[in-house]
Length: 259
Image 1 (cartoon, rainbow, N blue to C red):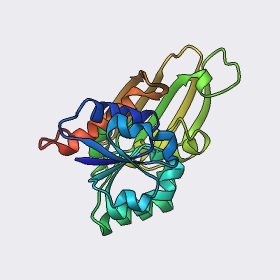
Image 2: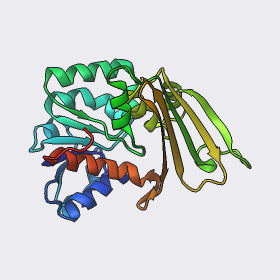
Image 3: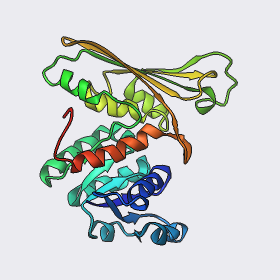
């Protein structure tokens, strides 16, 4: 599968290394859409890719799927046009807190018969949540995220402090760089107005810890994920990067697990 990549930050560079540098047998990043071609020109020779600055030319190139690895603003500007042309894998899922955009792209996937893939990112258990939800068997979903205090506040924190407690749509508005996972959890489950979120700044924490609790007619479940940082960029979760690569590989596989 030929992939068109939007953005070349930490996750984009991770994918370039794992797919192109290591000669992945089923995947190839062929083209990259960037804003500043000169800034990223070295990528062309290093990873055997072609850079584009024009989105229309990029979408008309020889690619099967677009992987977005940029930011919420880029998603808001480009996603509708991209979905008209290609299947998309979206990393900056926080953009979908905009219900108008979510409704628009949902309609476009149907109209143009293109798929929008939303990787689980730094959490897991989305298959369980979707299964419980499928016939109205899901009553509540709660997310508690604990992060190193310095990553959430500039104030000196000497003990664990709850910096946010509320619904998912409020969490992404107040902490847009920290709570993308609350949106993917909401989209898989009860929605951004019904998903409870708590964010804790912990001076003793050395990694991000996410605890998911759900209940309903099916019973109860708890899942805890302790994330190691991506070596290339400590601000990015290693699991978030792995989830993108893993999803791309599963798309290509004839055997589907947990789907």
